[in-house]
Image 1 (cartoon, rainbow, N blue to C red):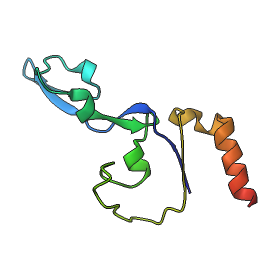
Image 2: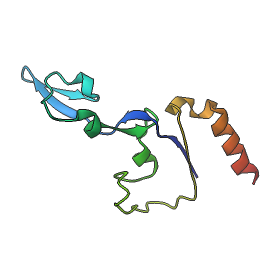
Image 3: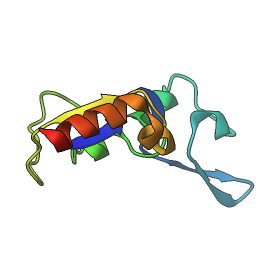
Image 4: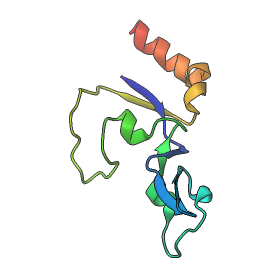
Length: 105
């Protein structure tokens, strides 16, 4: 049983950028000092998630591409996805209602 979020842009990849001879790690597209034109940094760096954990990571997948087979790291019986931040998941009435239902039945 997995609980997680899937509607908040979440950092999936970072970018290393050299500025004035120093290497800087950028986690979000708006942090890039010298973006190259024609590159969609948001689609390369961000994925659906809960702000901390990407949906792909929650599902133990390398990608959300439906054409790619699931790796099968562990069996998943059911997934509950909410539109909540990672730290707000346990406070969500929908999360608690689903968890109680799972525990009781």
